[in-house]
Image (cartoon, rainbow, N blue to C red; front, side, top):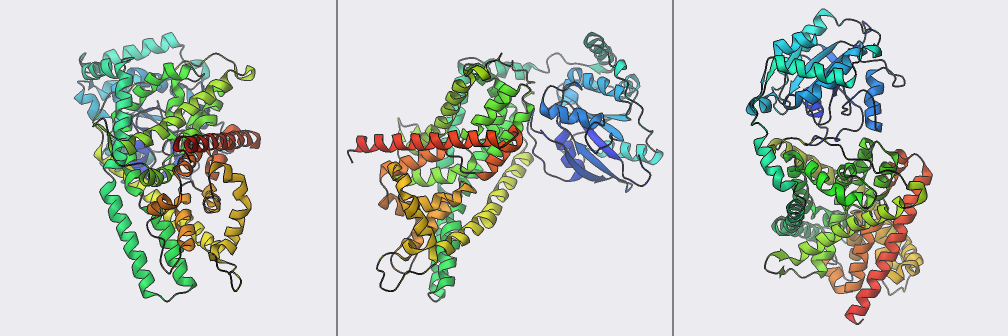
Length: 623
């Protein structure tokens, strides 16, 4: 370590041992944490200041069970700690983070890391949970057996890292010893490693044999081949019912507020371009997206609840057999589930998949998972065209339709994986699922509240950033050039946007889309939810009279057929209308060829499915 540079500390540990939670606590950042393995898939850096004022850089590395990498994310960790990362020296100190409730598994990596020749300190994270489970850990004996300082931590508490910070102060004040050359020959074999771990635990840890009793009892039902699947389907159905039922009141309040704001601005401004920009462009467009914030927060509330409780890895095991029938393993479940929030982190999470065949298949189908950006489109059209009534006295029809849309994406993804995996070039032995099942825990209200705040703020920033900018651009393109004198139609039809919409309308006419829908689909390439704002702007500018066209849902319900609405819903199940997703595919799959394949097959699926839906609905309705 240079005398003029700050020391670099690397957090090393197994997946789901709490490294990222500890990283957030030390650095004040807010990286994603959850109660399952594979959340961190890339190297992150931050800075800490110790109680004595010393500064150090902290690296949060992806979790790994061994220093022999099997996947892309484990390779990142291996290269950083061994000094093989391009342009980056070895860390000055390894902070080995171990889950105190799973020491038998975690200590294997600690013993392997000792051969790297880098100074180390061991952090027993989740120490309060270990005590609650009846574990008695003698840190002094553990420190003597390992030959390194051992401290405890509770990374979910504000003061949970005080012992670690004090230890870092002590180490940094005395000066870290220089790293020694790696001693690969000193890494014990698997049998010797297991024997040494068992000997250390026998000397330093006393275990209560009944500590896993509750988790085992619950897993008898949760992991049951039949009842476990029934529970999973029931949980998902309840989620989608709640998205509509619980969000009704706050959505009505936001919609009323947006409508009142538009009326007030229109009443207080003279007719002209500025009033049109504010009322027809900003308020009609952006306000039409903001109204769906309650539904997005409710959906993420359930996702965070399942993440933090430890249920999601169980769902992965339940899905492993079903996914195996289409050429995937349960290891793909976590990236695909992440794609329900956003396909970009879902595609990045495929780095945890060691087999390239499984990883490519997962990347290929991840965009078919219904991300949260689609929810405003679904909610708008379902509320406008699907009656709000109960089915069998238990379910809401609108919630069932939303569930069917999510299910359509899932089943289509499985069908694509099945077809691709059966091609000769994709044949191969299925990768078995190996995943640690964490103990169940009561979800942290702090983690859920923080997650909801972050997701809500991300959505609001998108509304106030990219969506606002696109709406201003769309308003300009929809307002200029002005129509010639004597023109009796809607002025927007003569604008740049209107002319482009009419030019492309014949291509989308077989799907039931008119030129207004085509205009709205173009800016939606930047972000799917923009289509709602774009429709609000286009229909506001198309309205007769001086005011806004009214509530967008009422407008489309009056002017669209059921066949058009269902066709557009199906279009958004498949269409890859998100440039960020395509960029993630290029980065993770390694080139434009893969991106072109994903883009082409998704657009083809979207067009074919929307066309079939439109024709079947016309035949069914007799139109």
